[in-house]
Image (cartoon, rainbow, N blue to C red):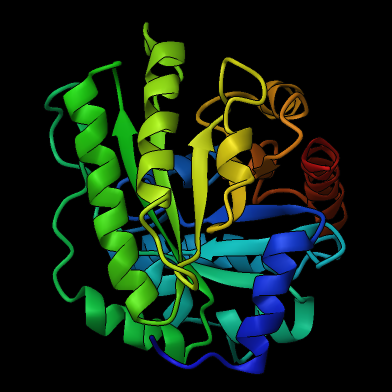
Length: 300
């Protein structure tokens, strides 16, 4: 296990006890055009990946430097690789988040999803993961996030998903970072509630095998049964359980989350709902501030 700095210890304390939510700013190649369209930037406005990523970086910079995007309500932010390597106002993004805003930086590390099998989509292989984790530590990243998806209540599929998530988590912990395991349950699944119960049981079985110091976080779909993941949140190896918005509107996601006292939000689309490139800074900051406030209230 790599040695931890004073900043890391302060960040761990913040993630365990702080009030607020985690902003998910980690749309990658596949989801970027949609995120930009929702922000009012059509595909005709850019040419090729470099310009596309340039546009999304400007959007993220606008969010991160907005007046309300501070540690008062935002505990952490999940970044895409390119964002981690980029700068805002001449500073590496992770450094600006922690030093200037008091927000704990995370990195999305998965490379997307495999095709569906046994009712789930496992993560694709992650070549070069150890090198990426070492780079993340150099940039001052606290933890990682890795996503896979459950479509149906299939016992084998769910067992495979959780096993893979913990396998990656062990690599992340070995690199001195804290993993956020994200086994998402599709909100449109006909067997969502059943899948969630199976998922909870699998997670708890794996958590019991972790040793002291092998701490993780969980990011899950807001469950149909309120309080379902309380036992996970209470587990000694779990710093925090956070919720993804999963396609629910901001208001719906916040209403559902507020019934789960031991979960906080980690919303992506719900955070950026109603934001547009065409807005003046005052309009943009007001709309973002309203979203931040709603998500914060649902998280506490």
